[in-house]
Amino acid sequence: MSMSQKLTPLTKLNPIEPVVSEERQLSWKVASNLFVSFKYAWAGVSYAFRTQRNFRIHVCVGTLAIGLSLLLHLQGVEIAVIAITSGLVLALELVNTAIESLVDLTVKQTYHELAKIAKDCAAAAVLISALVAVLVAATLLLPPLVKLVLAQL
Image 1 (cartoon, rainbow, N blue to C red):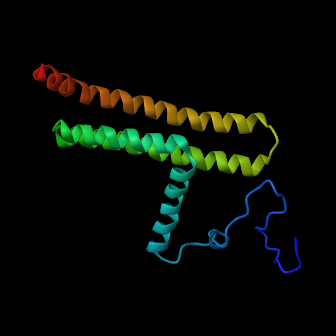
Image 2 (image 1 turned 180 degrees about the horizontal axis):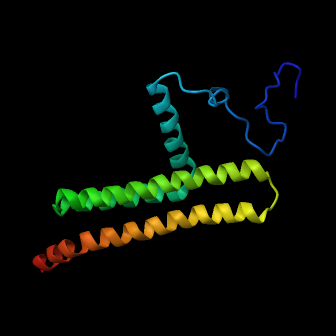
């Protein structure tokens, strides 16, 4: 570290770990207003979309399911159920990402059985919600989709 660099509590000395950006160094403070709170929340969504392959997959599949439900003219309640289950999957994927990051921060680059359990359980929550979302979407989308395909034949 050069003499010109200022050492802060968040400065990383380990070259393997990423350096925290200047704008996020003070993110531990309470947001000054509602807009700033939304800015931090959007930063989390943006981070997950940029870095988490599964989050991007869930966004695409959820968008496809909602788009298909609109195309098939499902009832408003059915569209809402698909949207809610898709949103739940995305929310749990964000929680999973947060848990994984926190566990990685805690155990650094060492193995710990409890860290494995925490990460595995968080991933399992996403898996279960995704399976339920697929079941809900299939239940609501397949009958009108089959009807539409058969009408075309």
